[in-house]
Length: 394
Ligand SMILES: [Zn+2]
Ligand SMILES: [Zn+2]
Image (tube, rainbow, N blue to C red; front, top):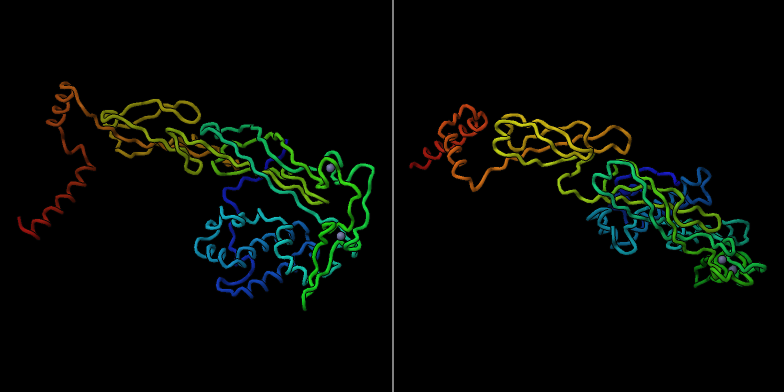
């Protein structure tokens, strides 16, 4: 059983300028300089503190720079904020969507000029670590169901180490030999005019060695796509759009990289009579004129079964009756929401002659003293009419 992670309502939404420590009016050069300095500081190969923390910070910096270094994306971000970038190809994936390798690849020109040949290891090539990708699964719950804990089996397609070669990528009984292109260093230096650039060796992909023969199953990729069924425990009270993060249940990492996470996004089907507001349940309750006037005890549904409520005599249209603790359990484990019942008075139409007589009889006997709210309102309405007569004559 995978452990369930934190529940977050909203994806990370940081100020990208603040992430890079620049002002909103910073020039492209200033942004680039800020990125270079921060990337140097938090580069996981260099940073002396907590590696995992540095990596997170590094990804955040890279994600911010990726957006702010692109004039078009920066303009969208300035105008619409982070949400404006969502759903656009190649952007708006959120910081979580950036892997270390995205950043190394995208900004290799920046890194190559401050990390020389020897930054990774002692000049010998080594396989680059790849962290596994995050994967996503969706579950749909009925409104009432979401009030209780439930267990669902989700199907995900994720990359796992090839079973045949144990993730080595090479054919059984063969070995690896030194890469002739880079002489085992894993990197090559390319010169163009004045510029010299260090890049990953295209032949061995930075490993410094190549296989004599590749695994027949994965063809040297070391990974295979697998379809997996994963049991997920969904805590009571999760609202639609919230998600669970199952740490390490995404695609496997490569060459010592860590596994990605599985995000389970919870969708809650809308209900015909109930609505949700935070942890509260809202329900509109139609009542007849006589129920509102005379009052009545009536039975209504809640997400936990039926309940008897008191419609007080003289209930106004729009009156709210609250049932404490009949809302959703808080996912943080802090009690339960309430249920709010909004009284809506229905007016009868197409009366039988007998009922019409009865209403006429009510009208004749009607005492406006018993309409305190109406009396008060009419006083101001009359005042308005007197003002108009004075101004315009009649
Ligand atoms: Zn090579
Ligand atoms: Zn294989």
